[in-house]
Image (cartoon, rainbow over all chains, first blue to last red; front, side):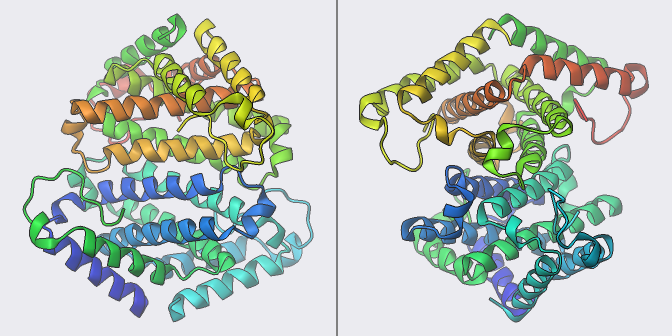
Length: 118
Length: 118
Length: 118
Length: 118
């Protein structure tokens, strides 16, 4: 993981340890906590048009930033406990996607559901 | 964002641009893509006991690593488009949590639902 | 629950019992299974415009119907184990919403995020 | 759909119509609202052990019932707009599952991830 993600992971270790909360932090539980936070993030966008979602009102932006902070927190804590490098895992998936979705072939196509990854 | 997260964000910009897929990447759509990937991650853990989730079988571990790569990909792409620093947002939430959940008060308590953030 | 939902609940009891899978069906696990199926449903809609989502292509429609079947299955199994009447719970929430969101007040307002429930 | 689910669907039509909120109720938006409510449901269970989840404390039970009401509300509204019979879709998936997972073969097996559906 990058330096900053590592620092965040260590901060989360200390936070949990200082409160004796490590016993709650099984990967199963943390995956659920992550899913709960994603639900809050989705709720911020549910009634917005796609266009509105590209230029959020200030109050919405602040709540979205806060939710993204929560999501990042649980994601980094989970990855730390599992021993998984998030950025490494993302780059590995992108290597695959670049092979699978040839740029010349897909550029300008009417294909409806282009993933970043698969 | 950290150097590595920034590099990942730039790689995702280039990936989308080369395929003319930027028009699909509204924040609303990316939040949905992120929620979809989280669903796949949750499915990997749904029948495991908490104990089993702490020591994954190799095949499960590989799928979980792959799903975490997908989650990270969409999270970083979303944050990049919104102009939000994920690690900064996470640290801001942790500053709040450290104030709210006093370590001496919570240590060893029987409190059932200790969050990392709120 | 309605007769049909009750019949579905009984069918799911028999299905689990015949395979000795009841031990996997804790509420915690079933909530995760439900979240996983919702993730698959969200993925079907992630790149569609709101307009496209109102008139699905036949192949997409079939996959959405199948995902809604999965969602209903886990939702009914979960509610059955918890002893919760889904339709009764929904009507109770709507009673609240009708009090909270006065029709004359909200009709035609520019309010951006109207919930069905809260 | 069963009579009760049909009655709930009609009540939701009237609720949305009386407030001029139908324009917000695209399938894409309703899928997101459903995912948001599932996130709140998951959050109720995230720190519970599987055993604790089988006998909820009264306050937790009430919140879970309320969340299941919200989930049912959005699920029925979505299915109504798409013209999909939820119970019919669930039974169709169970027909498949009964063929796929032979009871004699799976009974008592050590298989780790038995789905209700696939």
